[in-house]
Image 1: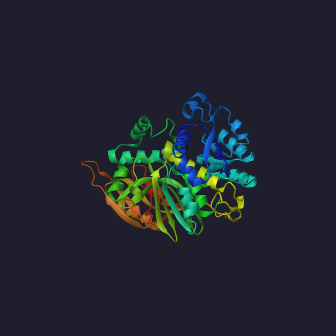
Image 2 (image 1 turned 45 degrees about the vertical axis):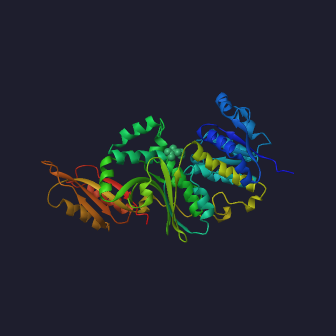
Image 3 (image 1 turned 180 degrees about the vertical axis):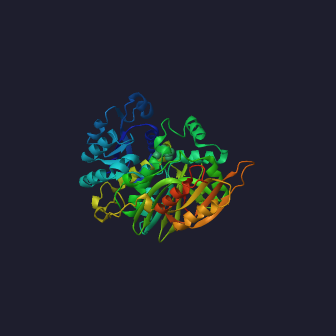
Length: 438
Ligand code: HSE
């Protein structure tokens, strides 16, 4: 007797949903051979019923009410591709309550409400899979949760937002400022009409939060993440960084320290010689440092129809393979067994340790540099490199660029306030964090 096909209901058939439909259709025979049984989308819910029908034809039932799918006992897996924390949260909770496995690409939902969702799923013995939620087509969840499971993860650092990486790449290669490139990115469809989540680092922080939980066996805690976007970055700092051998990337970083876990998203100077510094355009990449394996790098498309569908379908295959296994024998949602999660604190940004890039606009007169370096020395901050431009003709002011060694951020804040108060510092000091990722 052949095993019945796994039946999937799709909530939302936009960009990722239609990619999921296409990939499942095109590769169904390969997928069946891998999963051990067929996987078919038999129902699709979308408010735009006509458009949904134009994609699936008569090969799946199209409904406008997602609850028709959730209520249908024949559906084994619900794929949530609606996004956001609103109705998506309600529907995911209802699907779990109805005993359905859930696949979602919704990083915002899991980063903010993951604890509640995973607890409900555990209670019902169903899977919530979310490979597509972090770095689109890159199987980073799989790598962290399974491939690297032998390791004590030390840190994870990733370019996990394609929109901002595209903008930073354009700013660097064309020497343009942020606002100009954002407009171009919107025109080309790389940035949304409301780009807030991307450019303010929120999307990256959702993804970093999920990686942090999986990497270190801690609950998802988006509210503890430090988040800084790229909106205040200027082309001149990208240029100075380049002269000093660095590129500026928006990194999501999570790091194990003795006192807790760092979880932060901010523009970061990375040595140009690192592979990740050379990830350009809308591409994503994640570096993971494990104690046994050393450094590993994962690179690929972090968004888009079929790249994201690749991750959704991989989750469908995983669930299909495990469908009949006891929930106790499945891979835990957050990699660590539920009873083994730790409440290691996420450190406040003042306790984070990084190196810094500083740009000071100063009067070109004797003693300026010594006052600045004295302030840094008083805070125990050691200077790694220093660059001073010649003043332009008749200007009597110039840029001083300082790279520091690692320091506790709180000390740098004190030093920044003191330097800013100097009469010879003529403009707001630019400070950016720097990571060697060695
Ligand atoms: N907007 C995201 C990005 C993709 O630019 O990478 C979805 O998370």
